[in-house]
Image (cartoon, rainbow, N blue to C red; front, top):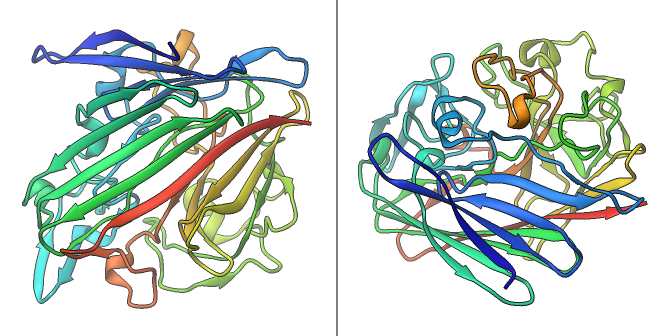
Length: 353
């Protein structure tokens, strides 16, 4: 058996949350929760064959419910921010829940990160966990009944593949992603400033002080946002410019060169010289939100093993469409209509050098 199921905890209303651990023939393992579809653990080897957990998260269900930061969770209906929680679609104006600096963030008050997903484990040489949920018409004030399926697959190439699928019976904005926090040197190993990052992105989205895109697609050329040639994250993270100052580091949408693709292609690579670990990101999504964990400051909810929250000790690479794209005609299309299928895939593949 390459899948193990255990009770992770019980919510205050009596609902049970389960953890499924997928294992491959190389010894890599991934722990997934039915609460929020969260990636709670990824254990991979370093160049010396020593295995370590490389993602953030909590020890108990109470922290996943009460804590912040969307640790490892599936995000929807709309990942990232929508300006003032308002948009107009097919002549109808919608007002969403405001939960972040006068904005709507990551699906609202009770987004997909707080749902208990229906789980179907599929054992085999490359084990899978299929998660499903239905977001009813009016859920968090979004239109349409949305059926969502997310499949996690652990490959024998040490890849974790996430396939997001959705259909709707009414036009609705959708932007699904995962909010996993990575430190590939190993969990609780300190700052990510020495991690070397490559992003195949020729533009990024500048934001205002509320982290809402201004509408401009700005070239990365000559800026702190140029990761086309690999560089240490800490090289330019303290650059004195509005974009960095507003976010307290990186928390920006990078637009992949050429936009979305039919099949997943290599779009990012993260390298840690101490452990030798490499994480390569393949996706057919058009963008990635690169976030350096600038807001990890909640002392009430320490991470696994009592590790205290500290800014810029983890990073996120959230493949997605552009934030607030429902309010910008020049941004990526985020509207799903009846008869269409939302279908995107992202893989986080681990290796060493």
